[in-house]
Length: 408
Image (tube, rainbow, N blue to C red; front, side, top):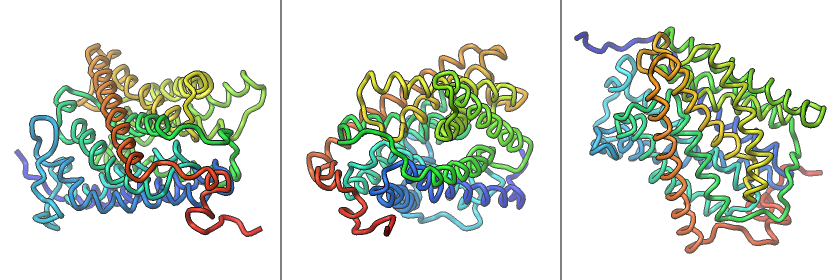
């Protein structure tokens, strides 16, 4: 066995990928969500992503990484041998990525935890207390994200079962989407549930930054600068483009007019769906994944959401949850062993992989939904989840922060 050796090319790529994934949260998610809200809530909406990144950064260093990627304990959680970052040497190599420093791997995984909680904020905008959101971040990252990430990526029971998730279909997108659904059920509907983007230009910039950053998200998950990273890069871009085109076609069929918001939604849906599959599938499969996912999310937003009556303001469940589910299942269908020897799907002779993917989806959905409900209820009983009616009607920027996005 050859000893692990630091690779400067891999290290450079992973440092860049880490910065790209940070860019996805701030300013990517912040701008994307901020442009979609009403103008009296734009700063509050952006602030939700900013504080999510800051709090998660501290949690991850103190104990989040250790519980997630520490030596497995009974398939449930990692052994936190390096609490408070003690004992982690600067020149140590990462156990799961032995050509890069452990510190780089820790930073890379930190950005995934941060964007996952930031994604949830899009569902609860315009009506949740900022103080309650801060408490929710601490509890949710600690008790939901960390265990699920360990189960799938840290050697936990879903990893042992053989679940495939290259860059976060279950850990990030299904997890965030289902948690968002649970939280909006607790919060209830806004007084004005209409989607009135006050500045769609912000959302274009945010979506572009998300698309750009997603190359670090997916190609970076190869954990090295090689052919697998290049394959994941191409699959990511292909699925995003297919998702955008697919949504535009749906707009034409339904209304006769393409919409910019629909195009952005389709691109994000494509990026979400390819995330678990990026390092396992061909670019041809990526086209199919992207084309189908827009239909899945469109149907969820247009028909499932009004039928069930929940107020997911910016359709976090509709896009991240539903497209994440499709992407995880599609990984079980299209995973090609000649792309990545770690994954073989139904179409390459392993039908059991679809069942494994389904089990992972159900486990993540069930745990995330139930625990999020419990955490949200505890916060509601103690400090309250929702702002006062007057604050909601007048806007959260002035009432919660004494600031305004616009001085006109």
